[in-house]
Length: 85
Image 1 (cartoon, helix red, strand yellow):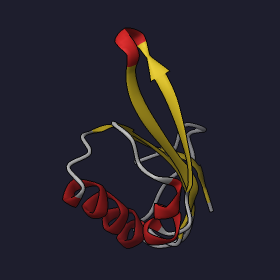
Image 2 (cartoon, helix red, strand yellow; image 1 turned 180 degrees about the vertical axis):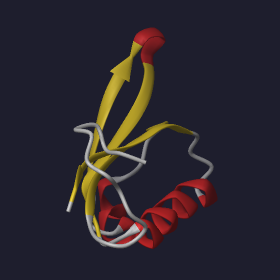
Image 3 (tube, rainbow, N blue to C red; image 1 turned 30 degrees about the vertical axis):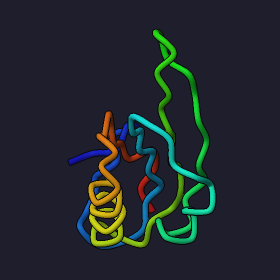
Image 4 (cartoon, one colour; image 1 turned 180 degrees about the horizontal axis):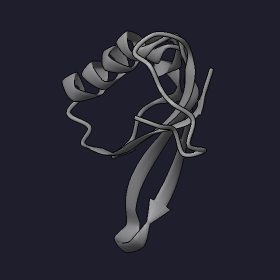
């Protein structure tokens, strides 16, 4: 797997991720999702999406964030690696 710049990704090591979910996530949740920044945006039809961006320690941390979002019943629209390392 490669990030959007074409760099090879591994299961270990940090990377910066952007995760988009449908719905709203309170900014107070930042500490519970590995300190990722939380912003909202309005999409067509007045649908709210929440964008999470941050450096995660490894793929285990990414899986942990995705599991937290699943438990909150927030559908994941996209998850992408912006930068490895």
